[in-house]
Every structure is written in structure tokens, then in C-alpha cells.
Image (cartoon, rainbow, N blue to C red; front, top):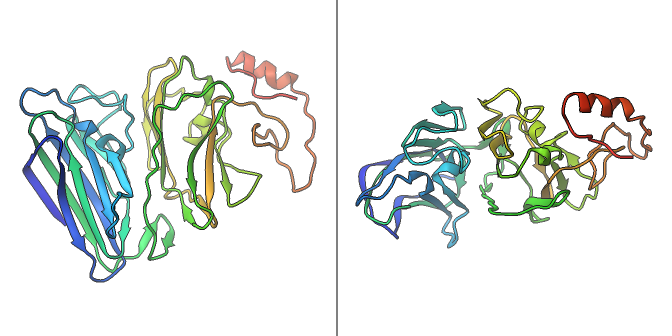
Length: 322
């Protein structure tokens, strides 16, 4: 491992902060902590948009490229400079955390490599800045994800999508894996901006391999983050999920971890989510299920009048169609 105190971080420069050749594979990074990036030259605080990149086994394009906010699964609206944070900080769980207004972001997500690793940090500032950085790891260490021991050749890959606009009832593929690849989800982070929270009426689903029928991962979007009723009990952060930001008008930031809730795929996958959705029968690519069906079983047609009445009483939109 290594650490940097009061390091000079020039602008417009991808600075190498650590490099190591693996002697006894598999090797694993076990901790990355970036206490802060201090601005100079009159720049405003903007540490959260510093970029961390991780090059694994000699690759030219980094498998991991994240902002410092993303390192700790914090939404873009949740922390701004050294202002009083809106993300409920300080917080910390086993996988990640943020413990200072000016940064203090860390991650213990295991990052495996077989031959070599190199990490870099790029400043978000126009002028020279000051960097603090800590990294540690182990050699001859099994690649572990929760209760799972992954193959020695396992590799962490980060997929990001930004500024995607969705119309009502549109679906979006959040992440894909090639059919030749097997793997497991580690963490999902959502930042969303809308005029209201009706888009949460959607089920997250995973298509494994060439399957045309998905595995439904939730009964609604906030339910995927292990909450309910549009996050009606405020801020929370647990080892399994959390809500960082919520303005009450349609904007939120949330995360879900899959370290102790494994979602694996043996032959590629697609992770799909939608902007609002209705429910009916056994479920389809465009509809959440409202009942359990055995294979080949037809859905039981439901009398939805009582359900719709309860939803209206609770201020929720109807969740089903016939």
C-alpha cells in the first residue's frame, strides 16, 4: 500500500498515486481512502468531482473510473464542496463511507488483479491543489464478495450512465455483460431528477443470458433500495441500502449493495429499469407481476377495485392494469 500527505496535484494532470506488480496472485486492493483534495489559487471547493481511475493488469483504458462522490456511492446532489452536506453525513458502513464535509470518502470494495495495478487521481480544479490519498491491499488473497469466493481471474468493472432522459413508461438498460461472461452485481447507485416520484412505480429486473423472462429484483424502485412508500421515513444508510438525498419534489439519490444479497449471472446479463410502470398477472417485460405464477400457469384475473381504493386512500397511483 501507500499514502500521500500534502501531495501536489497539478491541474489537467492524471497523477499516478500508486502502482504495484502482483507477485503471488490473486492480489486484491482492500481499501481506498481519499481524505480530500484542497483547492488553491482561489478555486471554490469541488473535491467531490475529482476523478479516481484504476488500471488493472496493464490495460490502456481503466476498468474503474469514478468521481470521489461515486467512490462512496453518494449522489451528485448530496454533497457540494465543504458546504453543510445534504447526504446525512458523516456516515460509514463496511463497504464505503463519507466522514468529513471536505471529503473523507472511502471504499473497501475488493479490486482484484493478477499482474499489476495503477491508480491515478485527476484534479477538478483550475489551479494547483493539495491531495491526501491512502490505499492498501493484499497478495495471495481470495477474491471475496460477501459470502461468495469468486474466481481468481475475477475483475471489477464500473458502468456509469449520465444525463439520460426518459419519457413516461420508457425502459432503460442500466448495465450489460457480454454473454460469454459470468459475474455478480456489487452495487447500484441511482441519481434521479423529476417533477414528482411517480417514476418509482417501476420494478428493477435482471435478464440472465438469453432469457426472455426476467428475474424481478423489486416490487417498485424504492422497494429495490429496501424502503417503501416513496421513502416516507427519511434518510437512512445501512450495509444493504441507503438514501442520500431527497428533496420531496422528485429528486433523490440512493444506493443498493449486493454483498450479502447476491445477484449472480452465469452467461451475461441485462439490468433493466423503467420510468413508472403498472402491474398485472405473472409479469411481462413491460409489466410488474402482481402475483406468483408457477411455470406455465395462467395468471388469475384479479378484482382490482379494492386495491385501487386502498391506493387512492394512501395517496398512491394505481399500480395495475387489466
